[in-house]
Image 1 (cartoon, helix red, strand yellow):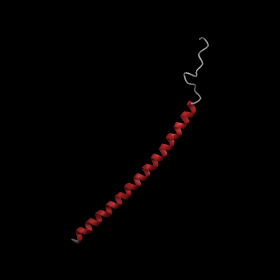
Image 2: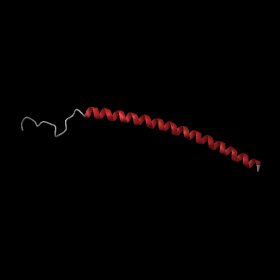
Image 3: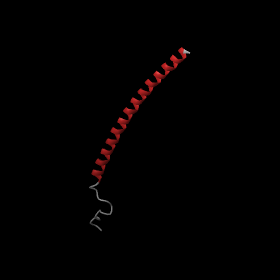
Image 4: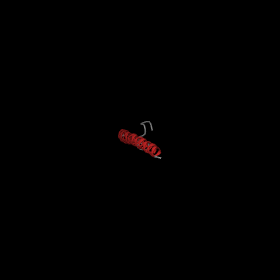
Length: 66
């Protein structure tokens, strides 16, 4: 009975280690996602800033031959 208990305890320790390792992976992935989200928002703002000076079709003045 004692060896079975030791075996279970060893497996539990291994599982706790694996869980901690997986948790660290998830933390790093979330940090990467956060960084990419920030970059994407920056790029969106840059594109919107560049596009805003353009006139819409309704705002365009017709060519002189009209």
